[in-house]
Image 1: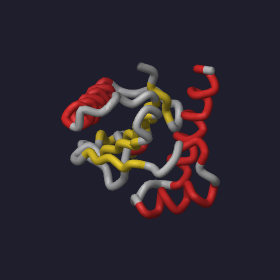
Image 2: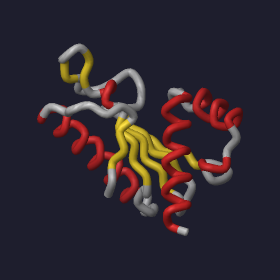
Image 3: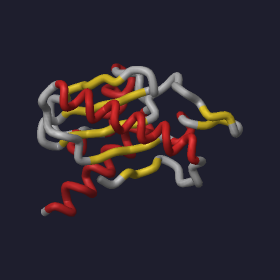
Image 4: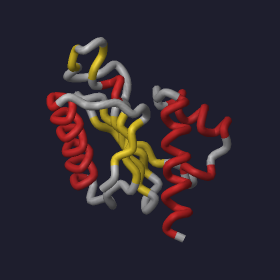
Length: 127
């Protein structure tokens, strides 16, 4: 599994541990739904550490994952994990549809746009 980072920067060991915890949380959530595992993962480092202080949870989603097999987007803020099914492929949503989806699900638009770009790159790489 490849992790993409919204912003590149070195991660301390405690942050790496929290990222692993969040990965496991989403995997357990997906497994509990008997759904296909996500293909694309996006870590938002700002949700894990702020001004040198490690955050056990975040006010916004800090790890997103998307499954191209069942069109589901998974997110966690370090405390809760959730899933949203999309009506069509994430990478095929227009900029306006991405904005509406992000706002309706209380996600940052720029992060959802980045995830959509990653999905598009992944899908085209599989072709």
